[in-house]
Image 1 (cartoon, helix red, strand yellow):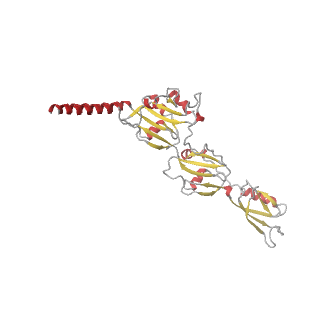
Image 2 (spheres, rainbow, N blue to C red):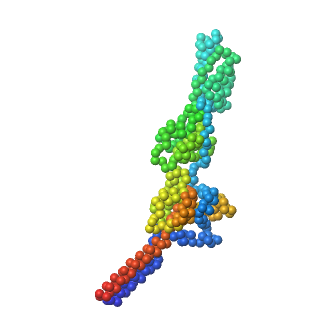
Length: 378
């Protein structure tokens, strides 16, 4: 009986030692495992350590181009005239008074002739009886009234003109989506801005994650965060007829994996996210598992971004390594910009794995001693 018990205990001890020798389950590899082979010429990825001497140069590299913001750039404000301007496609109601003894335009016994609903032609003119075409495009209603009256002066010296203007399609803007009250709105004047349009549409709803304002003009798409737009009056773009505006949440995100506070797809809450911002958003490091020297940011560049002179990555698959145990690493992490679809991977600590194995061995030793006592008692 004693030999059988001893044999069973020995087998148990051997099995546990084998398990301990194989390691323990982990959420990610350690830094050495992940970066293994990086120094070889045949490696299909490159490694860059983020430090004071490198972070500035890395910031100037081309972007990854993955999941970037829709549109590019923005149009600064250029103040327009306070009055509205007539454009092709607009409608004008023209009324002519003739105060003389004989009226050229009005019927006998009448002093007033009305010409309602006249559409401004593509060449910017309207047609008047006896006066032929009168060009009124790009004029304010007052300027158009004076132009029409001047045209009538040679044939109807006593005529007086009144004009009412109704904007057409080219004098309206579309507020497409992302606000409580989208729609098509006429330009009240030529100094009508994006923020004024958004206000008419009910404003930007609460709860949108880092909302962006998009402007479509002449086949191009421009983009800016609502935060920047609200903080800088010089960016409150003056609208033109035919512009389309819409608001949507920032679509960018990064992934957090490994020994992080949480593993998730994390949206960008602001225009620029640094590595320190990203760590804060994911709940920091897992205290019992993380390697503070192994903050890895994985990025996949397009082939067009590759450079051999240091002005860009040398390989498409690139890993940036940040060491949070030094002041240089901490400051550099605050300057390193995370891009859309980057993977922020927190490597597992080798010390944590060692401690886990030692704990298992300690448990094995305890079991062994208990087994020996049992064997003696038998």
